[in-house]
Amino acid sequence: MAKRTVLDLDVKGKKVIVRVDFNVPIKNGVITDDNRITAALPTINHLVEKGARVVLMSHLGKVDHKDPEKTATDKAKNNMAPVAERLAQLVKAKVTFVPVTKGSELEEAVKAMHDGEIVLVQNTRYEKGESKNDPELAAYWASLGDLFVSDAFGSVHRAHASTVGIAERLPSALGFLVEKEVKMLSAAIDDPKRPLVAILGGAKVSDKIAVIENLLKIADKVIIGGGMAYTFFKAQGYEIGTSLCEDDRVELAKDILARGEGKLFLPKDNVVANAFDNATEVKIVDSTAIPVGFMGLDIGPKTVEYFTKLLQGAKTVIWNGPVGVFEKDEFAVGTEAVCKAIAELDDAMTVIGGGDSASAAKKLGYSDKFSHISTGGGASLEFMEGKELPGIAVIQDKE
Ligand code: AMP
Image 1 (cartoon, protein in one colour):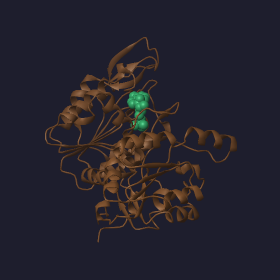
Image 2: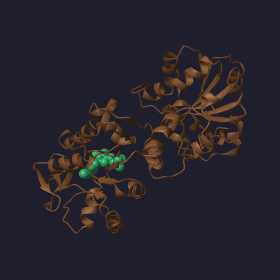
Image 3: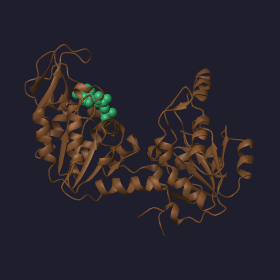
């Protein structure tokens, strides 16, 4: 059943609590990338234009609640004040920053709001009860508003007080950002145009097991690259030198290989080096001939051709995880080639599942060549695992 969206709410004069993802990178008090703030603007501007009183809540970084000294430094480091300043530059509405998460200063600020104004609340993680979905905290925050809007896709896989707790206590809806994420990821995972081809890379098999398992059920082809591939080569009985390997996953890799027969594809060759840093020898070898003392750090040219061919004709592509150590230019060639091959597909719905592959696409200049780049690494992974995301499940269905 479809979830209610912000368009289904009558918001004029109402206090609308919006959970946004303003978890932006900040260096020395300066925001180095404001993408997450701009991504939430469609929902915020819509609510402002409709005369809502918009109460924004977000987490920012992590706050340790065990060691009081650490709590104080984390709070100082992860203060929302610079975010409020940037937000005020981006919207036409009045923005009031409340530097606390509870108490009379917050309550007075919300009471004093006029229609079309914004209050930004301090970092939700200042509260110990936030990540535990503490019922008292959730009830308190819910008491500040009339309606709740979920627009923080990066946090919908977490059942926290500000993502799930408030939503359980107020009439709720999805914001435009989360609505788009759900629409695009559902189109790729739940109802894909076929053939559906998935490319999975990244460092560890253990992080992606559930994704591999789910995609083996629903995709027509599952291509594996990156550091993950070497555990599979080991499972096939090949020498993998000093390549990344999770020995405790070799048996599982054997099992996945057996189950994926005919639809699981591995690299044919690799760029290997005699060291991760400052390598003195770098060469291209077949996957069946990795020399002792060498580690695989990228896919090789035969694999690029092979993967490109496997992608031909795909109507839906899901990509999660770089196929090499793309942070180093000399091992970014394979990831760039995969990125290009996906970007150049005709008439295919192409989705990047956030995290490192999204950064790789951006770093390599392909970010506008995909149908969708997810804003939530962990959340999109869980979506691809076929899990229910608590921050979406809790939102009311359309009538
Ligand atoms: P993940 O967060 O699991 O998507 O992993 C991303 C990381 O995997 C990136 O930092 C890549 O550098 C790393 N990676 C990709 N291929 C390899 C490889 N062959 N060996 C080691 N690390 C790799």
